Amino acid sequence: MSLLAVRDLAVARGGLRAVEGVHFALAPGAALVLRGPNGIGKTTLLRTLAGLQPAVAGVIEAAADSMAYAGHSDGLKSALSAAENLRFWAEIFGGRDIEAALAAMNLRDLAARPAHALSAGQKRRLGLARLMVTGRPVWLLDEPTVSLDRDSVALFAAMLRAHLDRGGAAVIATHIDLGLHEAEILELGPFRAGRVRSQSRPAGFNEAFG
Image (cartoon, rainbow, N blue to C red):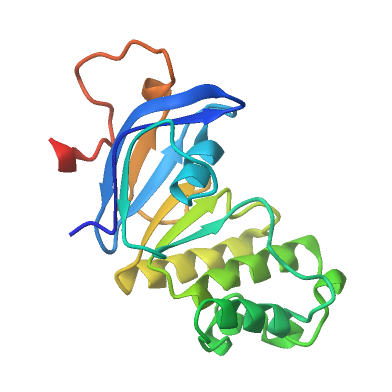
């Protein structure tokens, strides 16, 4: 069973194809790390998977409302406290308890502090904690460790590990080692639009579609 499956996907940025012919499938507990040079289309691919822009071609198969996206914006309301921000998102996604999310990213002592008074790293931690209250099994993560110090990266890695251990899945654009030794690596270079690819498939290719 796949939580997310992609066949022959092509995505575009600014009206021009970025990558094409992308295939992969994610089972419960699986993680896929996107790699490639800046500008190749990692963000564009994640935004397309999240439904924020249409695909140019191909098929994305996933259950309705199964994906949560964490991009470069933390998605916070500056006038609300940390706890109020999480409560807002919890209510949007079905009223989940926020205490576990506060604890996972070490935000309990900051729960009453307005988001505008948080540091960049604290805001990032709060934005990532938001993933836990969505209840969605597939996390789409675009450079999630930006603005995080080493200890905060470790907190996030532990949160992500727990999500996978519960049967969730993740697609992550990152160059940071998050300790996900079982994660597949998908190098996007061979899928650059217009590139002539050999018949051999790149390392990290998921053979779910044969």
